[in-house]
Structure formats: structure tokens, C-alpha cells
Length: 139
Image (cartoon, rainbow, N blue to C red; front, side, top):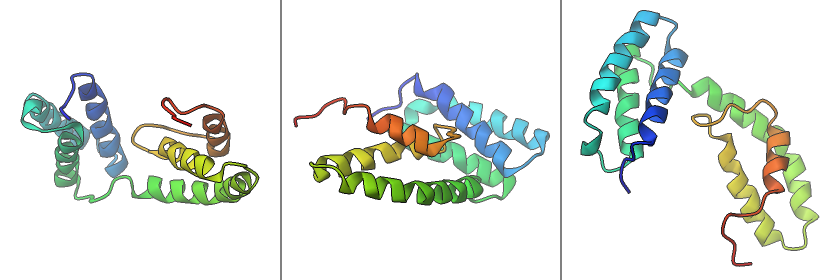
């Protein structure tokens, strides 16, 4: 896996998002973004996007002292997931091919990723995703 050019704007957006979650100080956001853009020019030194993203998030930690800017977001996501869990459990029980649908539910869990999505109504999004087919399925 390598770092693709198309990944760079999203990684930079994630850094700004993390900076804003970590502190309200605009001057710190600016410093973080200056360092992040310097690092971004050396993207080829990283084996893949997650490695580059990790280095970028390290900048946020260094400038803010906040180890996990997404802590509160994660707590909210867990609360939301726990609210959807009874629906998913019942949904799975009602399915004929439970293995297939368990895999589908697990794959659908990827939409909760806070770094990528801003979901307002998790149950609606989960139901929508469950109605989609897998991109590749040998079933």
C-alpha cells in the first residue's frame, strides 16, 4: 500500500479537525497546519496513508498536549452504537442466512468512523447500508 495523492487533502482535513477538537485556540490551529503542510511535502517517506496520518496526529498531540482529541466523539459513538444494538440483534435473529447478515452488520459498522463521517441519525444510516449489497460477494 502507498500514499495516494487523493488521500492528502483528506489527511490534512483530519488534522485540522483533530486540532479543533483538541483546542479552541486559532493560533494553535495555524501552527499545527503549518507543521502538517511541511510534513505533507514529505509524504513519499511514509509507506501508507495510516502511517502518514499517525505522524500528522502526533503533531496535534505535540502542540496541544491532548493525547486523544477524538475522546468525546468516541464516547458519543459508543453510546449511539449501544442504542442501535437491540435493533441489529433483532434484525439478525430474523434473517435466514445469519452468517451473511452478521458479516454485513460488521461491515456496516465502518460507517461509524468519526474521522470520515459525521452521522446525525445512526440507525437510519445503518438501515440504509444494510439495504445495499456488498461490492463483491460470492454468495
